[in-house]
Length: 76
Image 1 (cartoon, one colour):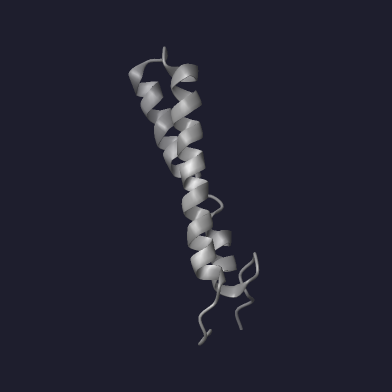
Image 2 (spheres, helix red, strand yellow; image 1 turned 90 degrees about the vertical axis):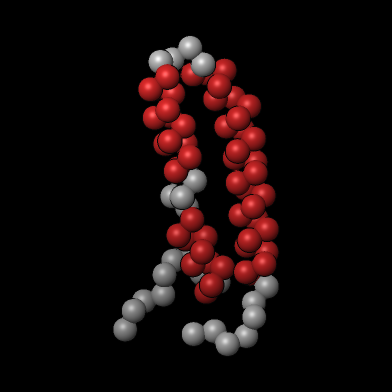
């Protein structure tokens, strides 16, 4: 367990916010043109999936912020 503050946490938060901002801008810019003529229910599903897909790499990123490694430490 860490007792000292680490630079990875504030840097990680800033990187996460920047990545989410870029991801949101890309989605808002390109997806409506691609799926604009699709049925509303299908568009809803697409936006739900795109709204959740950013969570996939989040676990490893949070592990890096806490430990400095990209995978979870072994549990003993």
